[in-house]
Each structure stands twice: as C-alpha cells, then as structure tokens.
Image (tube, rainbow, N blue to C red):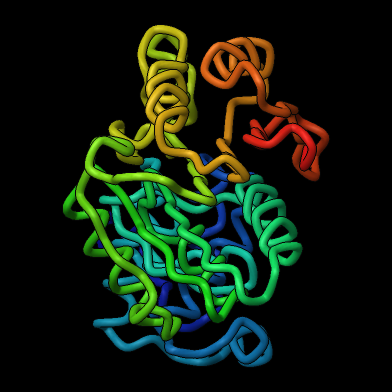
Length: 296
C-alpha cells in the first residue's frame, strides 16, 4: 500500500488519476484507461462524468479503496478481477479469480455455433453442451442469442459453476441452462448435437513466459500438459463417442496448435469434415468438426 505521503494529493479526480497513471504504466499499455475505469467504479459513475468533473472529491473511504486497487493492479492482478466484470459478445459477465477471464478471440467460436444453429430447422431439438464453461460466457451468449436453446454448462471446478450460474441468472437464461460438475464430458451422455469448448491449452513449458496477469488466472483453466494439448486430445476422444451423426464440435485452440489439433481430430473423427477457423486477428483459433462431412 502507498504511504500517506505517496497519496496525500489523491483528494479529487484529477489528482487521483495523476497519482495512479504512472503506477499502472508499469503493468499495462493503457494506464490512463485503467486508472479511469477503477476510479469510475469507486465513485459509482461513468468515465464521461468523471472526466467532465476533475474537481470531484474523493471521500477517505473512496480514496483508500482506489489506492488499494491501483496497487493490486500494479502487482499484476488482472483488471477484471478488480472491477468484477468483463464484457463478452455484447454482454457483461461477473468474473472472479475462480474463472478464466473471457477474451475476444473466443467470440469466434460463438459466432460459428450461432450460424450453425440458425441453419437448423425451427422445430429441431438441439442438445448442446459447453465443456469447461468457466464464467459461463459461451453458454450464456448462446442461450441469450438463441432463445429456445437448452444448454448444459460443464466444468470440473465447483467454484466456476457457481459463477456460471450467477451469470446465467444475470442474463435471464438460467431456466434453460443445466450445470454439471465433470471432467470434460465424462459425466455427460450422448448423443450431443452441439459441443463447444474453450479448454485449457497452455503448455507447461510456456507458463513462465506468460504475462504476470495471465499467471493470476486459474491454472486449471489454462495448463494442459507438456504441449498444451492434453485436454484437447481427451475431449476429442470423448466427443467421438457422444457427438450425434449430424452434430458439430467446436474447440478453441492455441494459434500454433492447428496442425497437431487437426491430426488428433482426424484420428478421432476419420470420416468427419475438419477445418481450422481463424479469429478476427487472423490467428488459428477454432477447430471445427462436422460429424457429417456433407455439412462442412
């Protein structure tokens, strides 16, 4: 924590930001934005109002809470763990250190799934499952954009499922979501029409090179063996016994894992249509498997 002399001038918006920005510059490329977001949270206002009123005073309690969060962020704590939320696919999700922070690249998986669902007959009964649901961002995004879709959210972490339940309730889709604690698909029976997953895919040897903020996220949701492919390989093997004959399997992968992931997919699904879909940044991101090759 800062000493009283370090933060004695944090009495109003202007001085608080002036104090925070150089400290946050040690950990983020957007220190001003993050300083403003944290201060907006503690003053219970939006950034526009904050910037329009640099003279707005901070109470002693607000100042202390703001200083604490800035110092936490400066040590590497991810910003969403301090603000308590993260936007994904146009929706706001509660996040805690028990869950992986939703990322924009995962939206590619949701877009593919929604496009496939839109091609299903209106009367079709779809059995969908999100494996490694974490915060529930994929589950909730699909349910929110497909009002008739029931979906099962699966995670090994009981704490993560608690957050996923809260997010499903936040977006009024909880009635169509079931929650199952399971190691991948081991506790889920087939046939499944749609399987989506953002599994762990960080290699053990790559852990030390990750940004400090990423290392603060749950290892269970990130690490996956020596090559980062253990969970993906096991999920493919399990899905091969559960995916419906006309089903779709979507798995997020690391940008350098396309060749290995495709090889494992071909072994598990020798007759399927398999391809790698890039994210908006052009990086290999989603392993797409159509059980019926005519649909791929």
